[in-house]
Length: 609
Image (cartoon, one colour):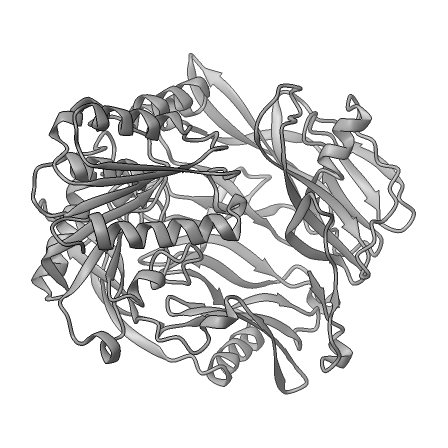
């Protein structure tokens, strides 16, 4: 971790390391001279006391030199070993109006504590409860919202409780797991009687409403986007207008903010210009309504405001895009200073252009996609060999931003076109696309991937006899299904950490009383392992030896069944690798990329891809 002094940006930053067993995976300022840091390390210990070969995280407070701040915090019921394991717990609020304290939460019992960062003293503010979870603090640091999981005649629901201006708690609304229409607190206002509520009822996209606590009534729409889901509320921390709304976040082609504050809007656009961001117009068809409009997206890159000073004159900016690894800048005093680049060795690389597209599935449903093509100056106009790369989840999505896995640009720089289809069942593109994936594992969800491949062929992007599929997690399942389905589209498939049957996912969602009604009924379809005899193309399987989400036995079972039938298969188990990318070592990432490349060249169809 590098810490700069903004008063002297020419000076080298102070570097804070971690011990040999752990690594820093997250850091944020909670006061001007205090950092809230999250680390992870490989361990066989778990809070339950059972051995679990996985990665564990802990939190701590550091000063600007990287030294731990002494704390007297001790959560009730935890042993010294368990307390050391969790650190200072979860951050509930940075208490922006309190110069010394923050709110943290005991991850075991749910108690909330006020923690003084200078004296180290901790004071319990609220006791946890088996009934309530997800505490939310208002602008003044008062816990004003919490959620309750319960049952109504056997139907699971989540109730939203709110503390009214007089201090009384009451349930205000609830949503049922089976309906999948969450209602949640998106933020608080300066008026203790008005909160912002995120709600999707009667809409395809989430909107943010004003909610009157006393009258228990949804008011006007505070923010809604015609094509994308609203997210949260961005508020001021400046003393002169503390708590006033500066903007609303929403999930467009990437995370975006709609600024309502003129100063922030003007500063944002000025910084975009200074950093060379240019827009390109994309014709966009709303999936539910069919309405067509032109939207502007950053051409190759765009910016996000990572942080802003209280007086809104100093900014930390992240510039990134599908063909631009993240770059971080400090903007102050009329100047822009580069802090650093992710993947700096790629600065002058011939990365491929990335675009937001849509195509029609065979049943007419509009499917979004993110297409990365090779640099035409290096590889010509195409058609190219192509890789279809469905995301995991399946309730997830991709963004028009830098892909940290390397799966898109690594292969684009080697002459492959890469399509990330946002198949039905993908979240974050509206209710219509999300719900269309119910019970369609290996069926219409798979059709959407295949129809993406056909779209690339029709557009002259993909060579029809040089297409492969590579996916991870649910995408690994989709790649196994690509090897099963006899459509002749793919020359080979690569499946990372994929479930060989839906049973593993169904079991996991059934064991959760909430997911049993929320997601379990939607996970139905085809099992690639049960159709192993239909595999007609070579397949490469890889997974991590510490994966606790999709256990390595899934890949091993699929590989063993293919070997018994004499079908071409390769299997690789990567050491000390869990499911999520934050656990991948550089060696893991390198091996994934290079082994896939080798497989494509040597084992993918006749003569390789």
